[in-house]
Length: 401
Image (cartoon, rainbow, N blue to C red; front, side, top):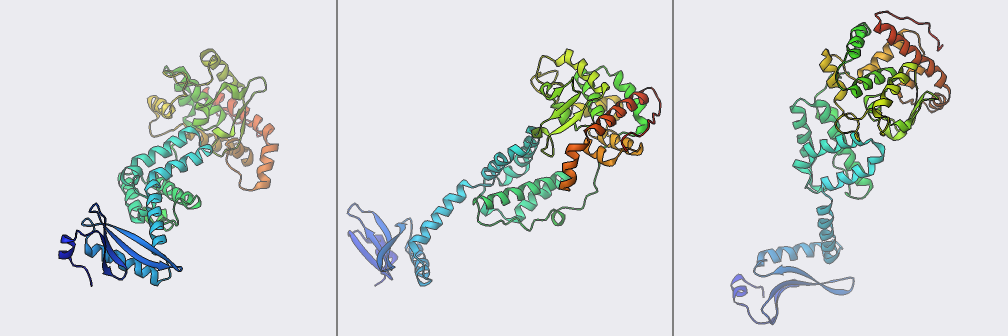
């Protein structure tokens, strides 16, 4: 005989009160009312708990019992299934998007410099963690990630939107590998199919004809001497702004005229040896009187233990009248253009720019054979800049063929 709601409201007698198909309400001597279901699996009698009456009503208890019988009919153990479901809930509650993303960042930290790591974290904190970070990875739908990156795109940051999407996809790939989620729901989020096509905007670069005026302005620059010397050194070495700003005195052998940038500070994570021209050495000797007592060659004038900030060089260029027409990174393009036009070997130029060689055999050759060529190239470049400062178009003989 099945139980009714009216009976349940008036039941007080301790014991088991059957509803049928193994489901019953157990009343304890102290008056507690517990829903149970008795079943057999693998030749053993087992039981399930469905909650406390009246919090769990008759209808809910019967639905839970019906679900358990369905599992039995399919050959499964309802108790084991419920344990797995509970474990899944616990697993997902600790594997939120933010928690896993931060673990991914820690795992990847050795591959990036401190600034890159900071930029990636900041982008996720600003645009992903706020709307989605507290959610379990498995609960987030591709459309929700798509909406988040489209919001970035809508504010005019299309490139950033693409980078953030790739970072979220990387987090999910890593999560699958490390068993933080069973499958990757973000596989089909292809940037080209999510975001609008973008025209590639190369960093603004100065032209050769602008060099005399720029070099004169830089010579007369009355701002922070660390910034002035840093810009001079940046152009003379054709390095990336971050490599110059983070330069440490311990990386230099002035007697041997070489700067060894460790792999940890390089974009391609490979040690880079930079020959130093007489002009570059002159800059460094000027800096010795300013920062020689510290670790950094070009420290911040406000925080000597920290390098010049990321925007320092471009801000100085803007003050000299080159806002939106030249960037610190653009000097590498200028160096490449002028050197190529003057007949220097492309391989030597590319190696000096620390661009990655895809061919393994050629890469090995780059490491072993181009130092002498690059010494001549950078000394030529220093002399060329001296000539342009004087207003000359200095076409020195090509000596790297």
